[in-house]
Amino acid sequence: FSIFWNELSSLVEAMNWSSVIHVMKIDVTKNDIPHDKINAWDLPSVYYFPAGEKKNPIEMTPVTRKDGNPQSDYDEGLSWVRSGYDLVKWMVNQGKLDLEFLSKLDSTSNSNEKIVEE
Image (tube, rainbow, N blue to C red):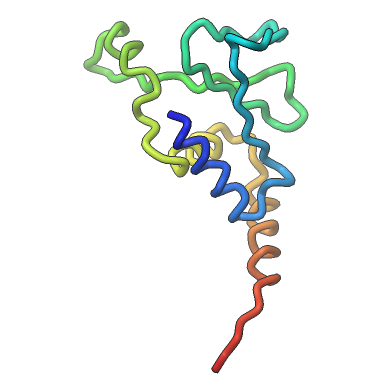
């Protein structure tokens, strides 16, 4: 699973979003998580803390299938995450990111590149 977080971190850096999006990993076996809305009993537990809403994290939950049973969905966990792109898509679908602002950050990084013609 950590390979996806490394990929997400690389995407955030490549898109020049690192001033807005911070990717962090916390080992709950070594760190106390003093937040009343975080339940890290199931691992991995993934939470998104939108800017300005630190008291209301959004938990990344397993996809529930219409024809599946709850135990099967639970056992599958976050197996729907196949890449860092899936994580970005999930964050966007939460409706908390300012996509216009992020696109400006990305275009800023592209304008800093020097194009050399031969």
